[in-house]
Amino acid sequence: MTDSRLLEITDRIRKRSIDSRKGYEEKIDAMRADGRARPRLSCGNLAHAIAACSDEEKAKLVADGMANIGIVSSYNDMLSAHQPYHAKLDQMKAEIVEAGAVSQMAGGVPAMCDGVTQGQSGMELSLFSRDVIAMSTAVAMTHNVFDGGMLFGICDKIVPGLLMGALSFGHLPFVFVPAGPMPTGISNSEKVKVRQQYVTGEVGRTELLQSESRAYHSPGTCTFYGTANSNQMMLEMMGLQLPGSSFVNPTDPLRRALDKEAAKTMVALAEADERVGLADMVTVESVMNGAIGLLATGGSTNHTLHIVAIAARAGIQFTWQDFADLSEIIPLLARVYPNGLADVNAFHAAGGTPFVIKELLSAGLLHGDIQTIIGKGLEPFGTMPKLEGDKAVWQPSPEQPADPMIVRPAADPFQPTGGLALMQGPLGQAVMKISAVKPENRFVEAPAVVFEDQDEMLAAYKAGELERDFIAVIRFQGPRANGMPELHKLTPSLGVLQDKGFKVALVTDGRMSGASGKVPSAIHVSPEAAMGGMIARIRDGDMMRLDPENGKLEVLIDTQELNGRTPSVAPSVLQTYGRDLFQTMRDTVSTADVGGSVF
Image 1: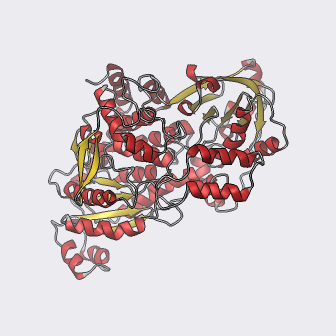
Image 2: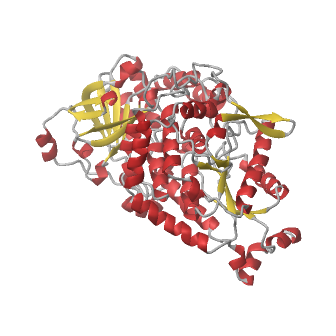
Image 3: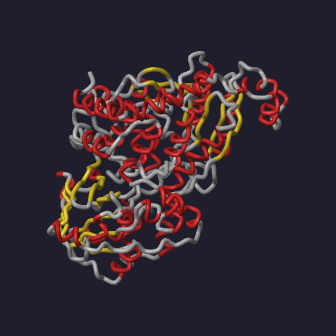
């Protein structure tokens, strides 16, 4: 039976979204009323669409009853997670033919690697790339010759962007196809240790590069539980990706068997007389399931932006307060780095997302009656795939996890509340990933040290000016200011100071990486400094208090004095390395609390 508190939150979101959801459904209904696409094409339209196809493919594509599946891929060689999609394209097209349909590569979307751009100029384009990917997905599908779509994407902004774009074609079914994580390299604790040794000067760049290269060493997703792997969890929680398929390594024979099953699933959806579209799957309940999964597993804070933005594209008004209210009732069931020592391979081996789904369903803390790519109901997503011969079959999740230090039953969680906290106060709203912060480090009361960018803080650290208790305030890092870059490169320095016994914290209108943890960080402060937010009025020495467990972000000075101060002036945004092309997006982007989107 579904928890009554979950039903109350659901009802509130549904009522709030009545008008916007109705508007979305009216657009979907209009496209459904047009009927299947290819019969409506002119002969010239269709000739262009099939000109490059083989004679066999042309014969199939001019047959009105033959489904055509559009593939939208984010392949490139720069992302280790997406490199396998190069070979997977032809493999999947062959699997679709075997399943009784045909397919075409509909289009590619840009896919930048946050690991490469972290701390670099490209990070200022990272969040905006999500909306560019959404538009690129729409361009790919707008040829209007397809009966469904397969989406090739894994990493940070790419999955949200693909999903947001596909929702504009929500009358069609879509299936996500993962490629899986790379095998485990060095331990996460060893990686963090070397990073901090580099910051303190104990090792040099050569040793640091050797360590990083042992951590990131082959095709596949990075193995920490950051935004990329949080995406994969979210897709399973929403029923948009095959059960238990996310964390199977690219070279595992099971991976190919899962791809074959994904192709069969896609074709069945596309050929159905009563076609179930993406709009039928992305509902208030499924969006909530994605958020619940995030809280139950201690996933990436970036999804406090992405889930809100995805929901909005489906006419659903999901807020940070909804996250906070859900966090009060959702237990933390997983400890995966940076919330623990295990990586996603160990998480999967211990039971993974299917075990978490099974436990949440049994506790009444998920919506189990949603429409998924394999039918009505989420219960099959609590099962784990295995290989029998050359076929993927699914078996029930065990009653107990293989390793209770990684995954726990709902009756015995790591903590009774979720992994994220909403904080409010004179500065507005902020979020914190408390599951990655030890309880004794979560509350910080200390004077502010204000910086206008992250390099200023690193310079102060190197100069020895931060050997004390303090709260670093780094502002003008929001979407309107400079695209809201992640500030992950601050983590090692702040971690060193914390290890020395200082009470340190970060407050910023920017983002932190999904891999960040350990140091309490109130991030995504909204409204941001560049939009008149009060964070622009903070001065060095102002006493501040972070109290995430009680949901408070406070400035311990007189409110009238704070309001009377002249706000700091935003630094000029550099226009090099492609940043000049995104000025229009900076001018029109929404605040972080409503998704940081231009739509």
